[in-house]
Image 1 (cartoon, helix red, strand yellow):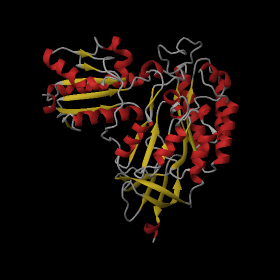
Image 2 (cartoon, one colour; image 1 turned 90 degrees about the horizontal axis):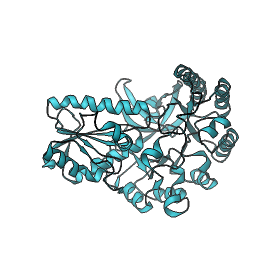
Image 3 (cartoon, one colour; image 1 turned 60 degrees about the vertical axis):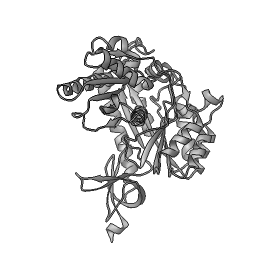
Image 4 (cartoon, one colour; image 1 turned 90 degrees about the vertical axis):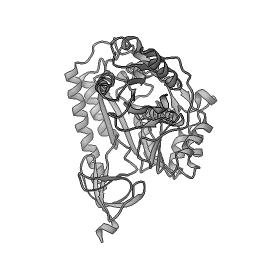
Length: 443
């Protein structure tokens, strides 16, 4: 029986994929399965994959091959789930002999049936596309217990020409508000709830016929177990005055926005099928700062998109100087088959893309360092994430630090508890992190 097997899990890719993994773990637990973090002991290993970029797909395949080494010991079956088989099962099934079961993004409800068939027949099983897109609220958190992600929708209908997501995840699908509130409440005491989707700002438009993000945020804020809320992946053209007002007035919403701008130049943005312009982006930043002076804005940019010239690149550097964003991530354009940009010409040489990304990081590093240096000598509130044993101090995050993608605050204190907030005096800064002490440590 499968309930007698020991299951291991590997989650790859983004935080949205992490939520899918947590819900699959919840399903396994509901069925009475035993889980282990030690893959060498697992009899069944599930690899939940990402396929967004060529590098993501390579990582997923490499992970499966590494897992196959455990078949010399206890491992009996490898299950490959998520984006990679969803999009590439035709190219994947025959060559990836190490995998025993394949499931797509909506097939988790069929995992037991697929495994039973694999055990009974000794054959490899492809169940991609055979499940139902069912919403589940039961989860086992893989983050630290004091923060969690809440995925409010799946899919996307922005159809940016560099992006595979609509071809993998399908059209935008908001989850029912009542179900999301139930899921958030069942998470228990959460110091920080991080709201995510491919595009969080379009929540409700497909399901309710109108945008419901503000209403969802108000109802999430009313939950007593949720201390603060962070918003990621807010598309600039859908950041409404109503949303800005809600962020400004709602004490539970952290004054932080992740806004993926992707480029600054109008010609390139149009080729990307992005709806914004350089002028509209700058106007949005000005509006946000006027209404919420303390807001920390993070963004992501793609360099080396097809036809991008040196002038475009220089103008993007100038945009960063003008925008003065708190933090940014920069990525070299990845040429993905089955996307609109794949056949665009001319493609930018990989060495040029690498050089431009490095230069953009250098520009932003100076901006970020200046912002952080401005906090030296001031007191900020820090959410303790635990202990950094290498630095021999506590580590946490301020409101302008999202997990994994932004910097951290390293601090000394007589005592600090994970999930609690502490006032920290900032003593020094670099281009990414802050360092300080609590009041009691200074005494």
